[in-house]
Length: 304
Image 1: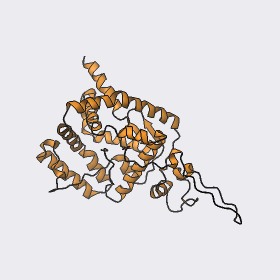
Image 2: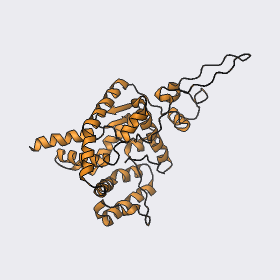
Image 3: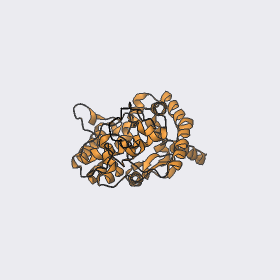
Image 4: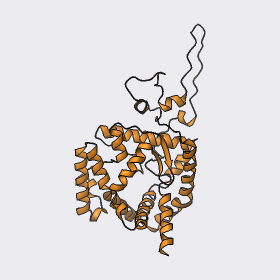
């Protein structure tokens, strides 16, 4: 019976990263060109004018190979050019057939397992209790944010994280309450992870990849996920299936707050895979730029 229960919990945890990993679909901006819909401009008369050079394709613009004037920038990387221009995120995608298959796999897991479980959980557990659980797990994730800030040289952010953890643990009933965010204290939470830290130090994204269960990532962020695993206190719960069970419950509780975001994302895009790739990559680039400036970017609704 215990093994059967462990298998059921493991399946639930696998589904937890399906479509809700790091990227909020309702607020992410997806370039029109990346979805295969370039705006058609009115034709102008060419009489008496030299023949015009062909306009760079939207795929080149979105991949960062050319700037908005049709030539490469001398001082900025392709990623930085596209981030500043807002034309799309530059990232290699050599694994597109695999990624599309994993996108479909995660999509089915979300609709067939994670969403029904989260909806049932919503009906049984009242919102104040769910909010307390979310606060508790957020407080428990202090090590990743604290050490990530230290590695980025953001000592002010690390001090703020240490203060938040102390206040919420001592005066917030072990983290179930969040007094550090009250108007009197207003201690901001600093989002920092190892993938972001590597980006701050100039390591490129590498290639795009969608992991089964875990969702969208990049070569750099996948490496960062391995490091973040060791900073997560939940990873040290023994035996392993108890750890999986706790993490699964955390994900179900989080997803219960944002049911419908993924559905809205699907309805608003022509090619959800391309939209997901661009939205994820742009958000990660923005976090890195803000990390370099030692300030936190505006966080899309529903994201941890």
